[in-house]
Length: 408
Image (cartoon, rainbow, N blue to C red; front, side, top):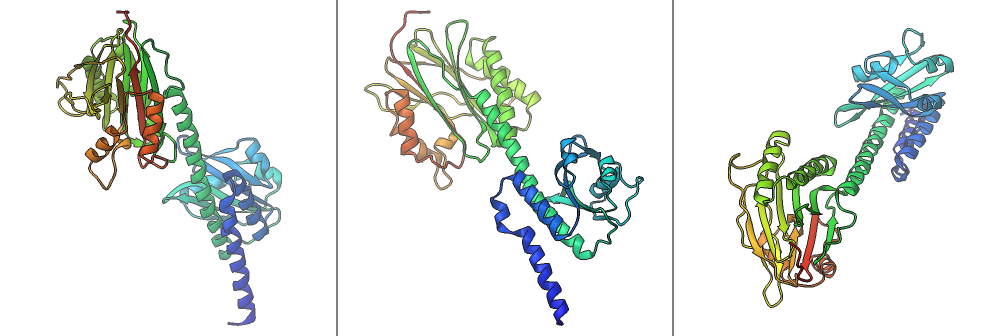
């Protein structure tokens, strides 16, 4: 290999390392894109560099980051896929080179106002799909080489990773906002009852399909819900929110938990088909001495009463919502709730482990649940079962009858 070729290869290696530098991974997404564009502009000796990300619903490319063309981002430039220079890159899924830019080839007036003479653009891919376009431009005519195209494509691949992270962060923010609106920030104050709850995400988005709810009904009864929509992240949380709202509405219509879940089952079959959902709905009487329960494929609650061993409530378990026979009966069970007794409602993430049958986890849980203060019981459960890093979402709701009431 002659010296000139060696120098060329060394220079190419240096340029490749500059856009794959591990330090980029330590930056926030917006800082990463800015730094990436700065390096690209420097390495390719161009005057501008810009990233446009695809809005899949509008089928438009949206200016997201830029160097030398910052006004693109400030003005919120949008380019339809298939139109203009960037739109052509996205549509063809191939690099596009314009050695001599003309008004007929670009529709973004900012490029012409900036005096761009030559352009090179490449698609940004994630999992084989185009999610954006990275392009560079010069104020003097330029013949872009194959090496230039390869280097820019490498930078686009890095931008694709950053874009994916950005999308995931946006989804995470939306999921967390939804969580705050759907999971009670504070449980209601209820005469004759004390309550406590925990929600521990088993997924990086911080929310899934698990939920709990406690509310007072016009009749004076108290509604208690625990449920689980299969899956994780924003999609499951949205479905959970719709089911939660529907159950609250049906609870105002029917005074029997089985009837409420029957109506909810009809709703899930029609509007949420294909999503596996389990739920348990209970109604505590105004005197707090009785609780009526109906179970749709969910784990039955545990009861811990003074002088008795803690155990799961014996009751029929009907099919999950949207499963089984559409006209199948959903049954309601009445259970006495002695003074001082504690009920524990929970989702399967609390007791299910990959390397053991679920009965082992249920038995271990029963060993730590006592007729004690609900807050104390919840703390004990979290500590004993080692849920610092659960593999599934966990929802826990503890309810204890503190004293007899005379209201009916």
